[in-house]
View (spheres, rainbow, N blue to C red):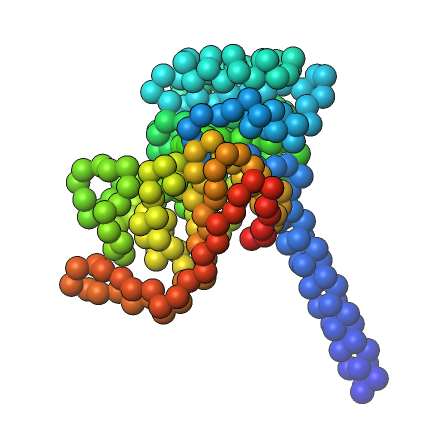
Length: 288
């Protein structure tokens, strides 16, 4: 009887060990993707910057590029502007898929999106984009393309949508929209669900040009375990799994690990005892 118990115990120990190994292996596989993110802080996109986008996308002869212009108030213009620049740099076909609530489930469009080697999301209003994409097969198609090795790129609003928690630009405690925040208060930053292609990161764009420090610090108050990344205009970050590389004409500001956060109930003001800040320029890399 004692021998049987010992054998049974050994069996369950081995089974548990096997389950743990499988779980770890699955988690590592789920976290790793074959694609890259090319996230631009808005502003002028130089030919040099766009050529770097083409290079990392590793386009083959039969590959094509899809432009998603749903953020823009003038989607046709956003597409034409992008196409006119990119066609000088690559012979690969460039097509526009301007999804709306009627075409959101179009199987042909979604299949074309999923198999695009490069997907570019235009600037404009990130909430407008997500209002079309959220909880649809479009989002699934973008995710599948990314996991299968495609490059997902975006500028301005197209940068904001990359995160799981997307900055909308609105303030809860202010009725009027402003390009930057005049102060740092908790429960003021409005966020919404984004594409979630990059986890535990909050991205802000036009960062130095529009002095958006207060806005990104407000985001860190709400999500203290996230890394805040402010990308300036004409500048981009390339995300490959956990590594980030900076390219372009300006800089990228990174805030992380705020400690000693206190909040005032009277006026929503906050204090942070300490946090880490870094400034990166072209050619430098860091990990998240």
